[in-house]
Image (tube, helix red, strand yellow):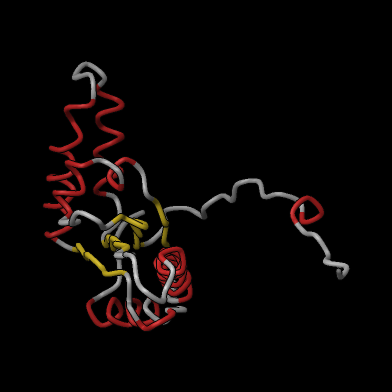
Length: 172
């Protein structure tokens, strides 16, 4: 993935579309961390510093590949789930809402003509990375959405046959 990515007006449109999801109780149990331009490069460097201790310094190819992944896309949007216990709204519904935000953001970016990938990876779970991102205790990274221009058409992974995953309910 490479430049160009969305400009500020397009990004605001994308985030507006992303936030139009089912949200029982209107809690907005998610938030966005956006990094583009120089901020994205600084974030990639900071995440790299958090990550590099996990690698053998002699494995230059793997180190280079990992660092490139962090800095490829011109825009990164981290979707942070803020699901929490609530007297009326199950946490599970709040988590699903954050997932819907991620999917809406990817779909909107693709519809706008950009490439987009929804990933989690190590930085969603690593405490050092979460601290670098500004993810608070009790929050979780629902996804990191990479937005830019694809260098080549993405390939699709094999999907299950519908016959294997669909059951027709026949009544009680």
